[in-house]
Each structure stands twice: as C-alpha cells, then as structure tokens.
Image (cartoon, rainbow, N blue to C red):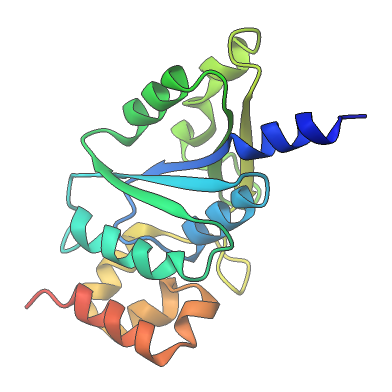
Length: 189
C-alpha cells in the first residue's frame, strides 16, 4: 500500500499529454484527454502547426481553450512544429514525472496505424520509462461511431452548423455561447 506522501508526490507530478493535429479538435480528442486527466493533475495538448484545409493551428488552440472550461484539471495548449517530437522531448525532460500519453482508437481497430505504434518505444523501454503510461480510449461520437477530423473539416467547408453538430463534445454543443464562439473561430470566408 502506498503511503499518503508517496501517493501525493505521484499525483502532484502527473501529466496527461495529448499530441496531434486537431484540425479540428473533436469530441473523440476531448474524451481521450478528459479520461486521461482522471489519472493526472494537469494536461498538455501539443497541436501541430500545419493547417488542414480551412482549419489552422491557432483555430485549434482557441477551440481547446474553450474545451478546457469543461475539463476537471488545468491544461496547457502548445502549438508546436511536431507534436510527437514535442511529446518525446517532454518525456525525456521530465523523467521523474508520471506521464499519461493519451491515444484515441477507432472501435474494433487499433486506430490509425501510428496512433499506438508511435509509443512502442516507451513500451519496449519500460526500464528507462517506468513512469510513462500509454492510455488508450476509443474515439467515438454519441452514436458510438468513429470520430474523424477529416470528415469534420469537410463539413466545416460545406455546412458549419452540421459540422458543429458532428464534432463538438456534447457538453460544449449544448452551451449556446461556446458553440457560437467556436462557429466564429471557424468562419473562414
């Protein structure tokens, strides 16, 4: 059994990390981070700089800032050149920190080929990284269908309201002010 001091120290130094493109950040991404934060005292979202269609990194960061209001722990949002490299660097720079790496997967599949495999280095080198946990959660919509940033991005160009209905987390979708703010962020014309 852990002493209170050891438990507190481990909880004090625990960070949930979610790297990705997030163009746009959808409910599946939100759910993975939300669940990861249950095991951590704060979170970091690394957003890739490269735009996808009409969605830019800045747009994604603003949307994550809105999403952060619905999370139980504080998060840092960082726009970076390469989210995966930034994750590996963070882990190497914080070897004494419990780190939970969030990974979304599509139901019945391993997810995108690299989603889980990109963290195999930590699994294979568990002796070097004993404080790193790979946290896998299915990334689905309210109907238990796989979420897709690509579908969301196409919908944004076609019909912004349909896009918001598709990709926003339920708790955000029902807040008229936050929904309107995200709609304004994504207007590209």
